[in-house]
Structure formats: structure tokens, C-alpha cells
Amino acid sequence: MKANLWHAVYGDVPTHRTPVLFLPGGMSTARDWPAPLLDVVSARRPAHLFDLREMGRCAWPTHANEADEYDLPQMADDVLHAMDVHGLRTAHLVGCSMGGAIAQLVAHARPTRIRSLTLLMSTSAAGSGETVQPPPSARMLAGIRREWELHAAGNSEGALVWRAHTMAYPERLVPGEAARYARRATAHGFNSGARHAQAFSRAPSRIGLLGRLPMPALVVHGSDDEMFPLAHALLMRDALPDARLRVYPGMGHFISNARSASIGADLDAFFDEVEEAREAGVARSRKI
Image (cartoon, rainbow, N blue to C red; front, side, top):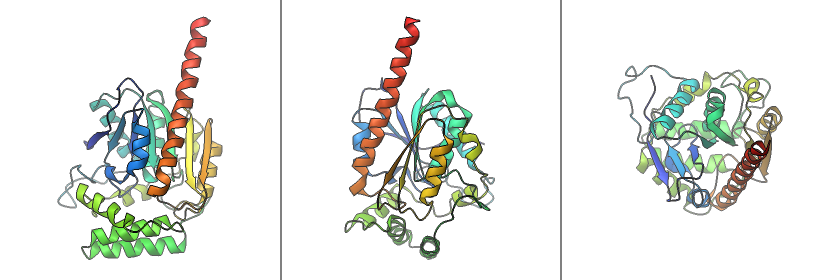
């Protein structure tokens, strides 16, 4: 069954431009995207934010047996359903971390609807049992365990502060940035019971399908990402037929405010490149 995803449009720009659809990472909300990144992108294109199922302002099951288990293909169906509901015939699709994994499946299912694909700090690896791509570091896994200890103790805001510092390493966040991130997420609706990790754990590798994605792609990754080490980005770049890679030195698995405007500018330039190439192709076809 498809879930109805919460949706909002960030900013106010003419709607004739190709919209940009942002998918957050697993156990993250639509409000986790840094404002400086969204400010850059939304200055020229409509920016559509979505919560993933069971998170943010989507419906939360009140009992464990109230909803069946789900997987990443079902979450990709949620996105396509949301595009239909909100009249998004085509879009630049941006996915962060697990949201990037979902974006790969959306692009594979409906390639003609995806003008371009951007994968931020993401992976094509299977959710478990992966042997080709390197696993998260021991430090990262210990940090995740501590985060969930705090969630279990009822301190989700403290858990998200811990998460921000764990994921951002080795980058140092400015004072108060992690606390603001945590307050924003909990105010929007952070559901520690969402089953995103279980959905991802059942995901098969997507490396084989990347070679069948015809749209231009941008892979953005941190050189020091300890969740999905840089090898994940290199493998996606090499598998995608029309891909560019942007590596941020010293960046971990977190988009800090300090980096977010620069990442937004990279996205904006990529969208321009895609649209200019498309317009040039249309013009050539009309002359033939």
C-alpha cells in the first residue's frame, strides 16, 4: 500500500521551471535540509520537500502490527504516488543517503519522469551482506549505537545532537548547529519507531540497475564519509552512464551549514547544464 507523503514547497519562484524534488535520508525529516542549500536552489526553481513514510508529518503507526513491513521499492512507489498527487510530471530528483537509494529506484521505475538524478552521500550497496563496498567505520557504528541508546531513553533531541556530531566527523560543526538541527527535526516530527533501517537492511544491491539509468547524474560525496566511504561514490560514478562526481574534502556524512550553500550552488549549476543540453537537443531536432 502506498503511503501519503507530507509535502511542502520551499520558496516562491515561477512554476514553469523544472521543479527539484528532495528526498531526505533514512530516519530524517523533510526539514533536515539546511536552509542555505534550499535558498540557493529555490531562488530559481521550485523546491519540493517530502517526508518519507512513518517520519515527520506522515502517518505514524501506533502499534507494531498496524502496518505491514515495507521495503525500498515500496518507498519509491510512495514518491511516484506523491509526484502524481502534486502534479509533478517531471523533476530533478535529489536524494540524500538512504533517500539517494530510493531515488535510484524511482529513476529506474520511471526514467522519463526524472530530468536528472543527484545522489548526496549515498550508496548503491545492499543493505546487509555487502562484500564489494566498504562498511561503515567502527567509530560510526559505535556512534549510531549510542544515538539509539538515547532514543530508547526518551531523549530524541539529545540523540539527534549526538547524531549530527557523529555523522559530521571529522568536520567540527559551529556551536549550536547540532542543537538547532535536533530541535528542527523534533519540532517537525521525529519518529524513533520508523522502520527505515529495516527497510534498508532488506535492500539488494542497485549497482546493476545504475547502468540502465539514462538521465544525467551528479554524485556528491565527502572525502571522509565514514557511513558510506568514498568508494561507494566512485562505484556509482563509474556505473552511471552520464555521471559527474563532486568530492568535498574533509566532509563526513552530514551537510553542515558551512558547506550547504556551496553544495546548493553545485546542484544549481548541474541543473542548468542539464536543462541547457536538453534545450540544445530539442533545437537540433527541430532543424532536422
